[in-house]
Amino acid sequence: MSQARPLTDTASFLLKGSSFTLTTLQLLTLDYDSLYAQLGYKVGQAPAFFNNTPVVLDIQKVSTVPVEIDFVKLLNIIRQHGLIPVGLRGANPDQTSRALALGLAVLPERVNKETEQTAPLPAGKQPEPKAKNELSSNTKLIMEPVRSGQQIYARGSDLVILASVGAGAEIIADGHIHVYGALRGRALAGVNGFDEARIFCQSLEAELVSVAGQYCVNDDLRKSHWGKSVSITLNGDHLQIQAL
Amino acid sequence: MSNETKKNAEVIVVTSGKGGVGKTTTSAAFSSGLAEQGYRTVVIDFDVGLRNLDLIMGCERRVVYDFINVIQGEATLNQALIKDKRFDNLYILPASQTRDKEALDKDAVGRIIDELKKDFDYIVCDSPAGIESGALMALYYADHAIVVTNPEVSSVRDSDRILGILSSRSKRAEEGRDRIKEFLLITRYSPSRVAKGEMLSVKDVQEILSVPLLGVIPESKAVLKASNEGVPVILNKDSDAGQAYEDCVKRFLGKEIPMRFTEKVGFFQRLFGAATE
Image (cartoon, rainbow over all chains, first blue to last red):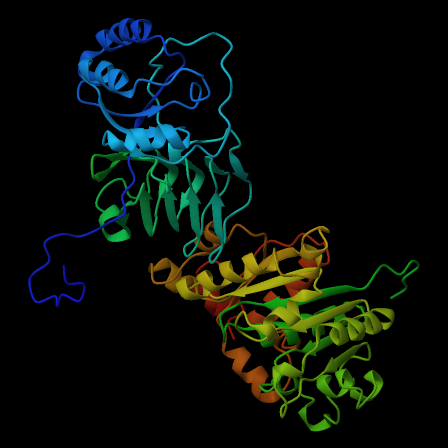
């Protein structure tokens, strides 16, 4: 295949970076029968939710078990319950190559240690957003006006501002943003892909607001709820503004 | 005035971000006002290369040495300081006109300010416009800041910016001491234009900037007259602007004085007494 192919044809694809929230199924034992039964019970509780849901299989907790993992059997169990396995995580090199041979993508490790739960969880724990959407509980609290030209970033947490945000200022958070005052600058919530992030303010006068990358500018914001107390959420691919 | 216990000298920076809003007019008026109230005051022009404090103070014909000469050791502080014609306790340290602001050195400025603190009660620093080195140097050693703002959107935006810089780029901020005490001074205020909805009101500006209000100086023909004559406007006791500046100085020194010149003057008031010119 020629490497120096001139681009005379119209492009047939585009490569883009996107972020997704994916459910992780963290395997705790290699008791396949128990897994089958418990997963069936779990899925049965909310079949519509689980049907055709992509899952990442996390085998970190069982990867050191001396018995070899039967990936074929595991993937079958998952698929039989309507879930679609798309990737693997927490595998050692041998498990990784076997997974790749089966067409599973191998995804990166988690950065932070998970907090240990005291009660044993059934296999197939409660689905929750993981990966980039990990939030710590340390909310960043700012008690003075944010001045024009200043930039505040709450990494891995929510941001609460107990004053107004000036025009020309930027407030950014991985989580939610609360402004107990007028929001006149730019506010960007859920910047690492957390699309359930919200922006709250007492008076909407912003230059730009954004949730998980979807933004809305001053011109469009003026059309509704301008100057009022609002909460801003992401609804599909557009921002929804509601009165508080 | 007798000072039984001398309190520490205080540095006041007059700044704004935006150019042309009335910093030099204010520096001249404020320092004259402090001297008039009995305090030993020195006012320094930090606008190297574009000096005009000396013109507004009326001492441009007596400038021999300037701030940069002192920084570079070419003259002593005593040689450069110019005594004001009207007040014995007021001195001016003019800026250089021929050099540029690169000649300002933070440590040297610090040493000069420490030297001045021995002999003066108040050191007023007239900042240049902008947020670059000249303005940063003027605010660095400040204890108080008077943020001069016109009731107009771009001036308010720039004042907001300079307020952010005051809270992070001063010596006090770097050393983790108490922050600079900031005051808002609204200049060129026209109550009639505010009433027509053409101009931001005092309340609008305060709401955006959230800083204590020192005073409101009305738009006044007296200001141009004062510049031309080289007499700080506060000395024109018949003018509205002069009186407003005097109120500001007294407020700064702790007196409670109600705001004047913020309401529209009616026809009969104008006829029978309220100062307008």
